[in-house]
Amino acid sequence: MNVTYSEVGATREGPLPAGYTHVTRRVRLTAGFAEAAEALAHWRPQHGAGLRVRTDAERVGLGVEFASGIGAGPLRLWVPCKIVWVVDQPSRYGFGFGTLPGHVETGEEAFVLSVDEIGDVWFEVRAFSRPAKWWVRLGAPFAKLVQARVTDRYAAAMRSL
Image (cartoon, rainbow, N blue to C red):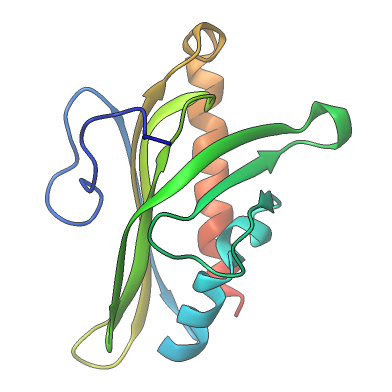
């Protein structure tokens, strides 16, 4: 299935594309790089943020499709995504995922771990998005608050390793 936007890979590096809401967070972790990379590869940010993940893949990988769900029971909203890029280097690990048809927004989000020159491990979230459904556009201020809260919870999940 194809993603719903044209700027595939734009969360990997450089400026985020115009015409979207941008979200970035960068936090230093106390966990080692290998431990953090393993947690990231097994959906730790999503689970730690209180989201459910549906996928056939045990770990992240290029082309893996998944859906994350927010809410509870019959009120859970599932949003489909696809991993569009992966970086796996000795001091940098992460991936970017894009929205698929049926997602309430259009855009891409990335989770990246890196080790700086003094050995500190950093977790960064970079995202660009805009509403794909009329009711999300109508509730845009609320949707931005939800996105900011979930992003903060991603960071907290990784910091708690």
